[in-house]
Length: 266
Image 1: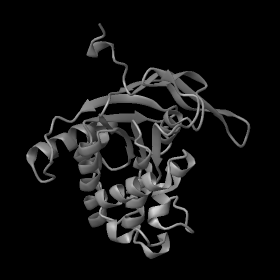
Image 2: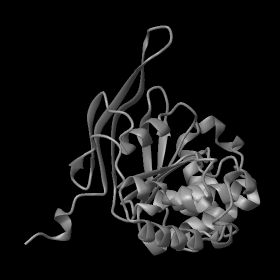
Image 3: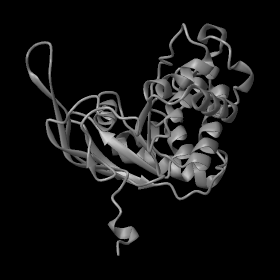
Image 4: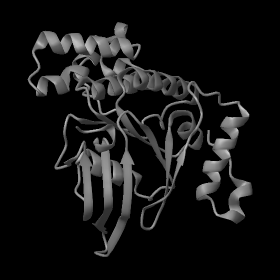
């Protein structure tokens, strides 16, 4: 009889490297020998400087690109292209401007051949979950930035993915709205329990959201450290424990001589 130990992780990345050709024809390694597991229902944040390969890693998990070397598996099966099991929320909202919020959320379900009544019901449930029940018939241009990103999250969740991939989804949103969206995202995660791989440049955001933080270094992109965040939810940004975790993560990717100059991310 199989045990929990035999259950494969939601995402398994093994010795993954990715080589790109640059405009001058010289090869550039975006990632080099990356290993990472993401457990079922786990919330993992990746953080690091621009050019460290965070988005490349997300795109590999999504199946948008293939590794030059190594392998990516989801639930024990090789990733061989995009799949509804792995939904993506981008920094830019990427909504269809000619569709209402309701129809945007329904879109993936329609592509899967889900009957109209079922997809309307599921979309309505997700819009309610993201606080947009009254905005179902509005078009993207009628929504604020925060509301558009809520629609994007609802659309990503509509196909009931096992893995939710988020590429700096709140980076372009004002601080107050971002904090609200972070709380809502955690509520959705606790309720629906997808595995989440969330890219951010913001250390505070990573500490607030993640169970583990993947710290990446550039040129070529490698995983420097994987740090556990042993804080219970909901997290208090003003607590000494939060500040200590922030400092521990910040010090892990700043050179020793620069650690005294680390600034708190907005």
